Length: 87
Length: 209
Image 1: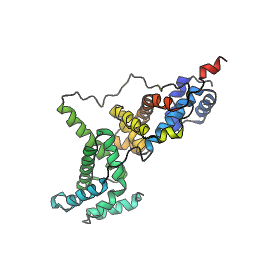
Image 2: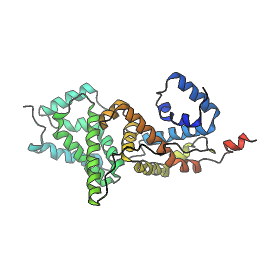
Image 3: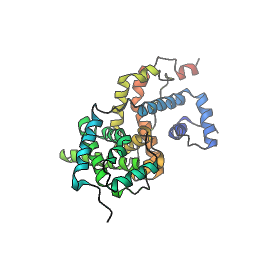
Image 4: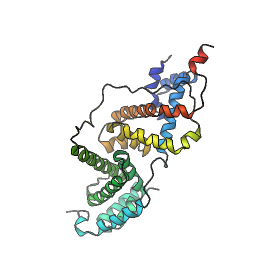
């Protein structure tokens, strides 16, 4: 089946997540081979997602872990903050 | 590396039985998960850190109510999301702004930006610090209902079912919102991607040769 670009765009997310059924996947791959516009959109979206998942995009503040466990230590010691015991 | 589900269950049982110090060990794999989840929503390091500490303490205090039918990480993320939302609400209430963050956008343009003179982002461009900053800004600009799905799926890399469970929505809605979120990001970032790439003869240019 011949697809229009707009139709391909609707399925970019599913394409990236490998959720398309075989028939539609084949049609979309055929389209992508011949359409630079859609391949550019697909590649740019994929690259953005790689960058989103990259550990360096969001980093922890310096000393975060130490401060967290210090505060937890206090909370764990407070008697009234202990997890409720089973009745 | 996170402990297996079974190991976590055992840890939780021991903590509830009184070995409270094991809680440090239980949450260690999720320190960044909780912080980043909150930071993407609050966009303030100091407040995100304070909120992340609150989340961990609350998780400890309510550990008994963790059912074990979801993953511990999913449960933590739910608490983190709620804490961040509460803080956002408080901040907004303080400036009398209306609360429409949960409104589903029925109408809207969720089509990607067309890049006719662009083929692939050079890896150097992606490596640049500015690109990461642009991405963080773009994520922050997404409406909350789209941003939260994107954070869980594409940043924390939870699967669809875990994301649905953490947000209390169904899987279909996760898919719809994720698609829209990704397309909005692509559109927001396209201008930077375009200038980062060398100019190429356009698609239409070739068409009429």
